[in-house]
Length: 143
Image (cartoon, rainbow, N blue to C red; front, side, top):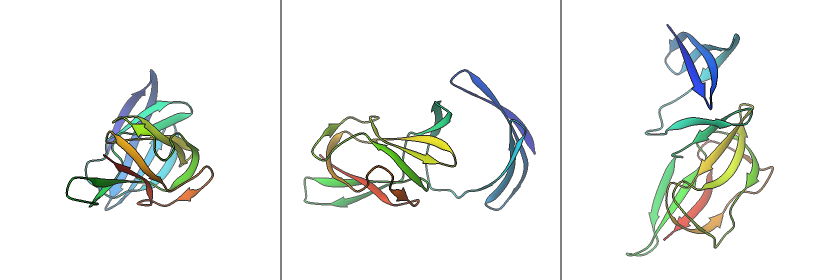
């Protein structure tokens, strides 16, 4: 179906898409075959960060709920299932948009989850070594 070269932090990865049917892709990365299940979540941007090859998820799945007329609590959800390797922020800490919140391992790759907003960490729902499912709420961020 197509061959691609992904250059991630200066390193090339040869990716071949062998087949694509509904939500399953048969791909080959640097000579190793994988069957990948996927589904559209909206606008989730993914880039790769150095270390192993690691994946850096820029815009995790988000949900919002009103706390009051002025303040909104924004929830940051896990974009994919994995294991929490390190929580980088604490409740009460102020974070900036794009700041790393945690590192998780998924599919043998390290994934940095970034804050999509600036604000105060209201609640941290995970700790090191927790297993999370796609869509689990990791953090709540207030204004």
